Amino acid sequence: MADKILKELTLKIWRQKDAKSKGGFETYKIHDISTGSSFLEMLDILNEQLVSENKEPVAFDHDCREGICGTCSLFIDGRAHGPDDDVTTCQLHMRRFEDGATITIEPWRCGAFPVIKDLIVDRGAYEKILQAGGYVSVNTGGVPDGNAIPIAKPAADEAMDAAACIGCGACAAACKNGSAMLFVSAKVSQLALLPQGKVEAARRAKAMVAKMDELGFGNCTNTRACEAVCPKCESIANIARLNREFIKAKLND
Image (cartoon, rainbow, N blue to C red; front, top):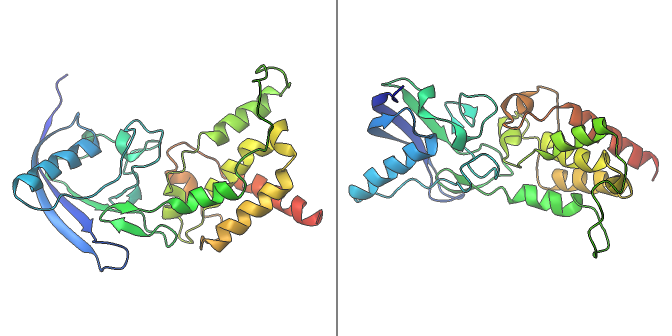
């Protein structure tokens, strides 16, 4: 079945020079877009059109374009990553939109993610949280066999589910409190569930939560907006595990 053609779309796109400048929406018309195009390919076509008109192209972030790097961070029609479920912006296709539609495109709205330019935000705060404790300390050397340490399959499965987090920032951007609890809890959970992560579990939970607070993220009030928009289906059960790990660590101080 051949792809349909969207004859005309209206794009309302947030334009902003930098974090200190005042931004605003600008409206663009774009024509003859295939429903088989990805959302980012549509933006590429728009930018080609703007360049041909000697206008400044829209700055937006992207890298892998296959849903694993977390770079393509856009609010589309008021929803993180757009109207489709369980996909990132780069996996969103234009078949999800109707001909003649008006599409509103914004950067992440979170105080801890300042705008760099237009639709690009600085998600370096997530990297700083990981640097605070999202790792295990090991001696380097020969690689042990994968089955050298027995791990129960349910624990391994849960750890793998938590490790699916790509750090895109949708959870913090969708949360009314700007909370990064789903991200932090996923990174804590993937290590807390495994023997290799238990040694530093207490230090990790305290350090990552402290860094999250320091960087200006809010706290969780169980609205579950983060879970609803997460492209990797991370569960708020991870937040409960983070709270348990944090309380245990504090009680042992």
